[in-house]
Length: 184
Image (cartoon, helix red, strand yellow):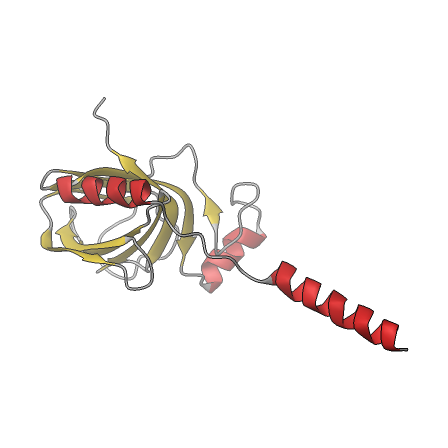
């Protein structure tokens, strides 16, 4: 009986150690590369996933099978589409697909229907992330007929998250990769 109790305790200890989460700390090289990119204001975020605000109409589109394979109403694969945000010096440009609802003003397909802007941002700030070694870039910018609030969270491992709020549309989130921008 004692050996069964010891075996059970040993297995529980082993299982708890196997399930324990590990923290992947960024290497000093990764942190330095991210800091250099952000300080030089010379980077590109290539989005791979769009995460729209899920509404009844978006659920209807997903249920009808109109989304790309492997996508859901809350997470849409966008590889192969125009899907970037670039910072080059003091200028920012973006061409991101939009999945959601237009809330006011303007017509559809004025400029392809996506989130498109280019120019010098207002209220530009770069702050360190509180929980990791990443950076948060925030700014406001105007498109053709609407204004955007952009929050980009950049991580040393090369991952990025974008949150774009519009004056005319539902919010959009994007996930992708950040890397130094190489002019073509």
